[in-house]
Image 1 (tube, rainbow, N blue to C red):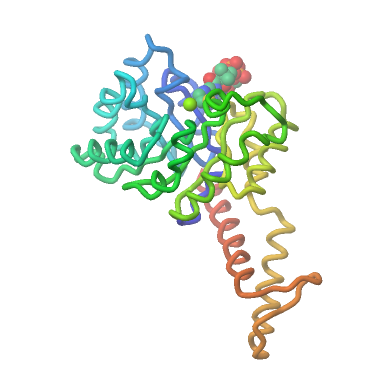
Image 2 (tube, rainbow, N blue to C red; image 1 turned 60 degrees about the vertical axis):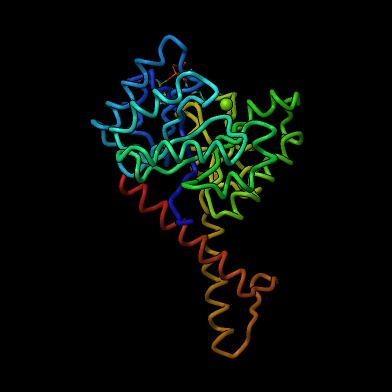
Length: 290
Ligand code: COA
Ligand code: MG
């Protein structure tokens, strides 16, 4: 897994040209152009054509671009892929993934068109069966990342919303285990109350603590909170630098262990420290290029 930032992953309905245009000036690390749930049935054909045109004509800079198609359980999935292929989509996000076979089916279709030869696959993890199969889905061909679909999952589990998301913890952590085992990205689900910054911040912090790379968002007003929560802060960067310096010094003395702030620092902590610095650098580089 490289250090490409996925702190803020903004959903944009592909039926909204103004919102798509606006995204070119927004501080989001990634965009999900949505043809699925954010687009009404009557709008699907127009949205699909508009998205294909937009991908070909507009420059979204270094932001990662994912296209969420409709699921294979609908009549629209194939048409979505046919329309997008000439635009050489960077990534297709498949909803309602239940098994690795769903990914293989999509990979076979992508294989069949030269426009999608390099297209990566992302999976919406949002069904009970999908969560139970997370490990094999993460390891399937072309897989680059998971997006948690916590609204759909809560619906299927029949669980209730809780601030601590206790009913979802097993699913969230199962997806994280599978993503990390396969070396792919894992992005947390949306926070529906898009005017509640404090609630969003708390949920971002929880996602970050669990190990997620970032959060999916529904409104531009949520960008700053997610970007801050999923970036290494000044204290983390300072600690990483001091750990590396102390460990280097210990090594030159022939020691395998250092102590920083009263805590032991071993080689494995140095791996994390270097990753923290690399992430911070990747974020700076992206920000400069936006
Ligand atoms: N991406 C980019 N721009 C967005 C945006 C988004 N997701 N949501 C809103 N905007 C833009 C609007 O176009 C508007 O721009 P303008 O002032 O230049 O016209 C501005 O931000 C303010 O929008 P606002 O009036 O506050 O929001 P709204 O009431 O029009 O829409 C939502 C609210 C929730 C319907 C809308 O944000 C949305 O459609 N979000 C995405 C939903 C989605 O994709 N769901 C599927 C995954 S869960
Ligand atoms: Mg969903």
